[in-house]
Structure formats: C-alpha cells, structure tokens
Length: 239
Image (cartoon, rainbow, N blue to C red; front, side, top):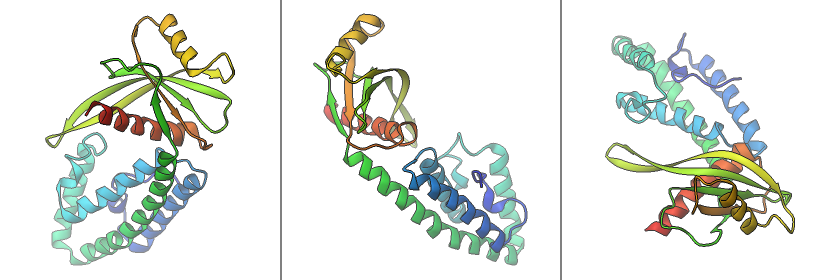
C-alpha cells in the first residue's frame, strides 16, 4: 500500500467499507516502518492526514492556510464541490461522517505509537557545543554519533525563521558533508579544527555534537530528531 492521497476519503466512490480497507492497508504499511524505528517521512505524513480529516470535519477551509504547500488548488476545489454535494445528499453525508468517525481514532492511535518512538529517541540524545560558541549560531556544523561508535557524521546546518498565522517558526536545513572514522585522531575537537581549516566559508562556525547510545536508522529517524532537538537547544541557549 502506497501513501494516501491528500483527499483519499473523498476520492472515487465514497463507501465506508472501501475507505476502511484503504485506511487499514495504509496504517499497516506505516506500522511496518515504525516497527523498524523508521519514523520519517511516515510520521509527518500521518499527522497531515489526521489534521486534514479534522479540518474537513470542522469545515475550516480544508487546511488551505495550515498546509499551503501540501493541498493544491485542485484538491481544495474538489473538497469544496464535495461539500456542495453533501448539502443535498444526506446519505452521502452519513457515509462520509462514518468514515471520518472511524478513521480519526485509527490515525491517532498510530500517531501515538510513532510519537512514543520519537520521544524515546529524543530523550536519549545528548547535545553539546564543541569548543566556544560564537555569537552567530544560525549557521554551522552538526556532528552526529550513534551507538555503533564507528564514525562521526558531519553535516552543515542553517537555521531559518518563517512566519505562519502570525507566529514565527524555526526551521533547519542540513546538508551531509562526510563521515570520519571514530579513533584517537578524529576526535570531535580535531574534526572541528579540520572543518575550519578546509572550509573557509565559515571561519568561526558554531559546531554542535549530538550523541546517542541508540542504534536507529539515521536518515529516517536519528537525523530528523537530532535536527529538531538542535533547533530547540539553540533557541533555549539564545533565550
């Protein structure tokens, strides 16, 4: 089962049993990823679908403002047309309400499972600066070490701030540079020195190390959680 479409509950024939099967097949696929501690992009995807259903149920412009990059104008128009149909079709409305009533607890239960994994990993992260922290911390390097103890993964990072609904949000963009074998020579301090020497675009970079004793998938779990944790850490240090 692949990913659900943004308007899966309204696509094609609106039938409770059909949509129930579609949802359960999707959740089975998500749970297979969670069982292997692979959180992303599955966790963000299922949260989107949960919020989308809630917004549709509550008739709040179908997340047009909350998720402008995810729902297209075509999808929004499709949902608006469906609402017009529902006004004139009590049987269709009942069927859709049954689909939503069944789906929300199912989605929420799976989200909770994913968040438990997320929180467990986040609680087992240790974040600390490597050397002195410069005044400017919007750009720098992230050193990532997991429980395998074999290598240190190096990423550049750049913090961004964007506004949505009169609130400011912090984001982070990372780019993988290289991996250093963990040994007596390649300490995190030595890696920082090499980065400064070899990359003159950041002469006085902020360098943070994120360590964990856990062994989880890097790209699907460790790195996304490390990035979010680093954003929170830098924001707290700046406060």
